[in-house]
Image (cartoon, rainbow, N blue to C red; front, side, top):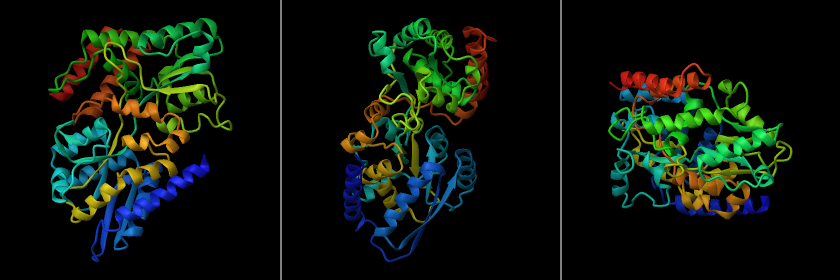
Length: 421
């Protein structure tokens, strides 16, 4: 498998070389300043910048590798002031509406038109859609760079042992949890992050959406306190009875550890970055036993939460043409394939997900593609951080028994309405 991956990388380098050889034909020296992320996303950006510079030696890069919160705070301050500090910025998709509505980003539709090109149809629809304003059909202000999506994990050996079929509805998950609770005393039936704020909200949203509920409607009105939302929360609380003691304090480390050591049967939330070693016998006790899938449906179909990282060009950039050329290079199928192979960052293109070599390396890619194609973005509002905190607080109070489901939704509705007024 490693030899095949190396072959793909070598072929990719040849393709990238051919693609970029005439991409930015100018002798003028240009420095692109990128406001980017740390960790694997930073490594991916460094890889792409080095590959681009190899074919465009007149272009140099200054790459800032920041935490998610620092990136948001710093770029908001600078872009609001009209500073020409950056030529490319990475944006977490729930923050994207603020950048776009404020006019901080360059209209990429105009840049495509000037280049005699158009947005590549190979981009996964919902991933590209969060880079548009209004979302999913408006002007393209950013391109999808990282294809994060929330997924579902379950032990196939336990499902087979108890003659349980492939879970297609959330009702099937609850039924399986009941079976494991009765027949597998050493196994925790279901895992999720119960910490208030982002963790518990992230686990709850695919259930809420699948049950037909939502936090805000398309007009931005608060609709969290509905019959569908109540059914979703009552289900979530019933499912939580089969979660481990202390789940209200669970974070990703606890969920990941329980999956890897084999003590957990199902996890209603996993992300690509959590599961990279799940079939590594040096790290995992469940090699070949864990299935990664898109979430089940219920009233609606599968509705996983997407977590796309976008790349856009500030309106204040003084190097827009070169930045646009680099943006297309960064998000090209060839570069995404190389980033996925070498760094493990999930792509946002259909063709890259369908690459046999990558599917061999990352067995969850078909599920990841399914999740992205059916994914739902968090509400497009500038107030999502505050809304998420309010909803997460109410959900956790319900989880620990301090509020009923009805009381939790009443509380969330009241607080969210204050936020959006």
